[in-house]
Length: 161
DNA sequence: GCCAACGTTGGC
DNA sequence: GCCAACGTTGGC
Image 1 (cartoon, rainbow, N blue to C red):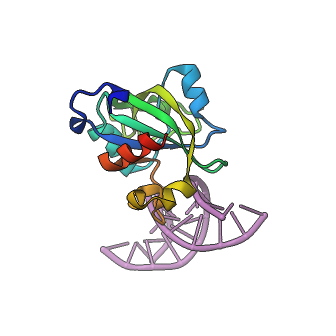
Image 2: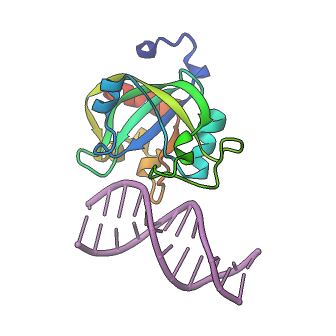
């Protein structure tokens, strides 16, 4: 746990964020250092970002769709939830006229790059690991792009990576 | 490219 | 409130 410098790790929370690497990859995050996690248009995922994610929370960065599919690296929350301004821009692909600056519907957080994994922890590895069977990414039909991760799962994964 | 599962929309 | 149709997600 000292990887992240936490004194009391149980006070932190852990999350998994999905991204298609052709859209935004762990390499992009390393280059940028930090980024805002905009464009999430799912209410449950929004609620996690708006209400629960806190500065310092650990993030598993997951590459979806394009092999190698799996956890490619680690990040942390660097700013807690605030309105996703891309929803207000008609020229943005994630524009949503129901969200307005005086009454925002969609929220985002900022995240900061921490490190790459030594190699991608593949979905196949996750599926094969007895301690990781409850993770959203291995449960049928769970498509949430922002999901909570249990401390025990986080612990297993950082030791794999 | 296929397709199952999901979330949203809109008619009623 | 129900539910069919539709668009999207995301593994394979």
